[in-house]
Image (cartoon, rainbow, N blue to C red; front, side):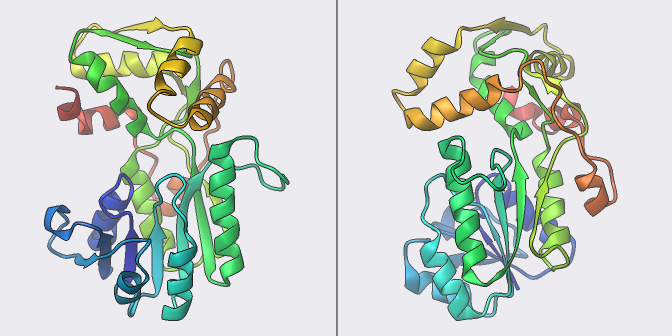
Amino acid sequence: MFLVVGATAHFGRQAVDALLSAGHPVRALTRRPESAGLPAGAQVAAGDLTDAESLNIALAGVSAIFLVLPYQMDVAPLLSAARRAGVQRIVFLSSGAVVDGAERQPDVIAQYHRDVERAIEESGIEWTFLRLLFPAINSLSFAMQLAGGDVIRAAYGQATASVIHEDDVAEVVSAVLGGGYAGRSLDLTGPQSLTQVEQVAVLGEILGRPLVFEELDDAPVREQMARFMDPAFINALFDLMAATVGKPAEVNSVVEDLTGHAPRSYARWVADHRGDFA
């Protein structure tokens, strides 16, 4: 039995589908089973990462966990429950911002994910870390702007990313959750490096709209977003983007090696999410 933690979140929901398609028994942890909308083939377990009793029930008979965590969630209760339940393996969706060997990580995003990685390592449970930086789903942030016209305004138009389709991540999860990649950190990338300006061009082509990218100064954008989100998190995210300007993003073969097919293109992602931009 494989348990997906974060089963209604991005990546977790797709992992449930991929695991079921591969014929694996899947249990999905969710706080609200009645509104989870999970496929009929999945066992749905009501639970919360802060509720030890619900975790004990959800983990009964589980051999491996795919873990998607919201930022700053404490992983300790889950790891304690997993050890008690005899879980053999954890696959954690981590961040490509993590710097291996660094005594202190460069920002709060990397630090949080490295702290979780370290806790998993120290748990004694076999582990694999899947690291990614800028998933294609980040483009959903453009949807609200497109509801009001054909101009997308953002900072760092020349920031680059090898954006990855969430279905490719899910297929990698399905490939590694059964074992064989213990003690490895795998960087996941899409098939090509694209700037934000190039992403908007692809978005416009697929949607059939004459989209225009308008460059914004990052300072007021940071300030505005920091009114609603942790300023340290916002600065870390923007600094990660700024560091990529003028530098092609890494593209590797990990997805193809593990799934047997090339990563889906950004154009494919846009086509799959056309309804989100309607």
